[in-house]
Image 1: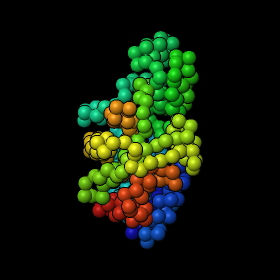
Image 2 (image 1 turned 90 degrees about the vertical axis):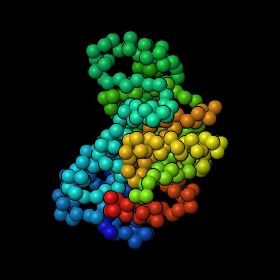
Image 3 (image 1 turned 60 degrees about the vertical axis):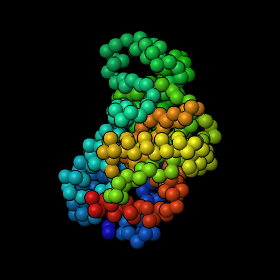
Image 4 (image 1 turned 180 degrees about the vertical axis):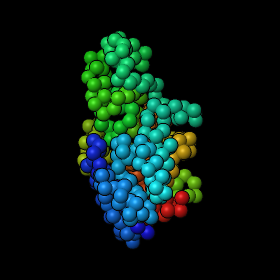
Length: 311
């Protein structure tokens, strides 16, 4: 099997993508798979058509890798690829849309509102923020509606910091989601499907030393402690797995995904977002969950590539 890995790109998460691509390539090579790594550049389409790899595995983050456009191109060229189809990627990439699907499945998700940049041009920005702050209550989480790796995400404790948080988030996307803050434990559940049905891997608890799981805490070894499985009750572990599988199916995700939750002090599970291109770095959560399941990364990644080849 020949697998072409796409890594890098021009998004804000370029460095993460490069690290993920390299680690996936190393694991596949160890499993005996023929691997090539390539950047998404002006030669990519020609290269794909000329070489026609058996499978493409994209570790590209940001719009180019997660908004469905790349997946549409692969489908059009009849090239098989690891990961969700274009329609599913678009749904998951848009956080407010994914939350709507979660609610329809009966999952709890923090109350929120999505605000496009145009709202602040056409309406009085100060009045909009005052109303949102009053109705949702502080603290709040402000985040780009379509972005990853916690970039542009701010916890807002009071009205004083609200405006700046919105400006920071708009630097990453023209649509910003303002979400009620839920205090609790951050937990991620990775779901894989090797063509025999989706399986939830052991939930990973995230415990950053700083108390905030930002960009640095995600990718700098030693800044965050991880516990697999998460230190919650057996009942909560089962609920997390069940909820992750529900959203995986509702969004029609494929092969692999990471579903993020907050577990509050009462043990309630709150859906936050779904990721169709989980990070694969040394500190990323899906690889940790695979290892906790007792599997090796070479075997797991080769199985995912084979699942894509058989799709």
